[in-house]
Length: 130
Image 1 (tube, rainbow, N blue to C red):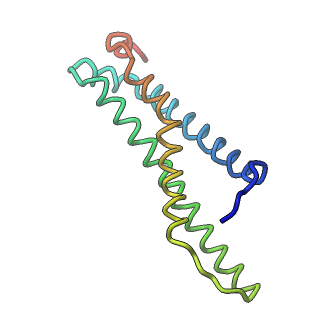
Image 2 (image 1 turned 180 degrees about the vertical axis):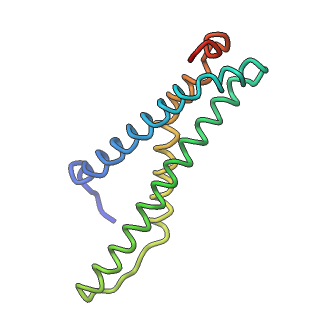
Image 3 (image 1 turned 180 degrees about the horizontal axis):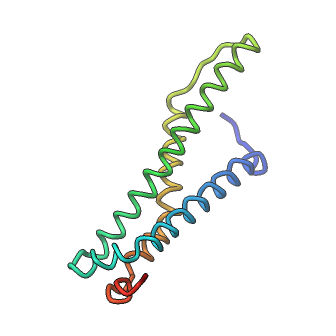
């Protein structure tokens, strides 16, 4: 593989950014809707690291599900495109693993802020939340 100029990678970077922002918004809504639950967990002496880990795992699972759907859809479309164009279909498992790695990384990076917000909630204020 040779050098690829940055401007050719721009569409992929934009799609990762947009997907990450979507994950962050979903996780922020989840934290807001579950404020009382988080408050109860913190009130019964759950450590903030446990709450942080819970929401990080949720963000990673969400992004991996999206990555799985994207890879499956991409492989299906590539298969049919290869059949139509009469070219060999040769998916690369290494590239698929890299795609899942990026998907998990997007979940961690964009899920950290909502998870940190959940972990830093004051239990008393969270229990008062309606």
